[in-house]
Length: 88
Image (cartoon, rainbow, N blue to C red; front, side):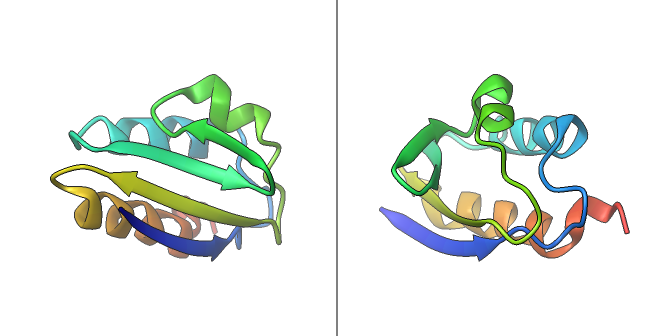
């Protein structure tokens, strides 16, 4: 299992467009990928799950992956968050 904690740094938070980008990215990996906010854990391959997290600017999230390409999956998602989903 590979996991990293990140903070949402794009001002608009995780709305529909970033959620879609996250889901598209996760589809490239075989691993099971989850995002945790507090005690809530959702499947990162579910756009509805991501949207319902309500991750606003400054929210701390944990990205968790389990499987053969888990490290690459976590790295790819962390890069999306760090790039602010190329919105700013």
